[in-house]
Image (tube, rainbow, N blue to C red):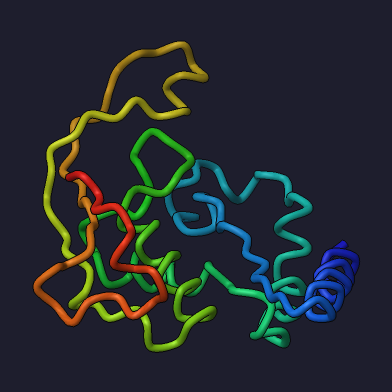
Amino acid sequence: TAGDVLEQVDTLASTLASSGHSFRFVIAPDKRTVYPERVRDSASRAETCTDTARPELRAGMAARPNTTVDLWEPVLNEKARLTDTPVYWAHDTHWNSHGVIAAVRAIVDSVAPGVWVPEDVALTQVQQEHLGDLMRMMGLRDRDATSEVAASRNHGSRGVTAPGAEEWPRPQV
């Protein structure tokens, strides 16, 4: 149940805090909860345990802002902001870079408020082919050709203030 999961989060948080550590519990929203309008015949689809437990789990996560990060909100906000650009791959159950960036930003903001500065993230459009997991599960090898975004640290900006950041390898685009 959601209560059991939250109890385990509290236990882990307490154990880690007693040793001077912290953590964040996150759950990635599944594609059908972000795009329910694209699920066929949703009216006759049986309710799943995640559908039943989600409201209680999200409410419990909201009550634990120092140990949990609700990723539904930032991913849904990114979907709303990018009205013509999806945040999940077309033939896949996973996020594309738009969904990933929204989630990573929420996690960074939770762990180190003020470190994420949009100007520090350079976004570059790249053309890419992607073989989605749904296509693979059906035994198909058709690939989606898509315009994707690659993110890297913007070296012309104020830079990342995390300790040791100057030693981080620069991502290849």
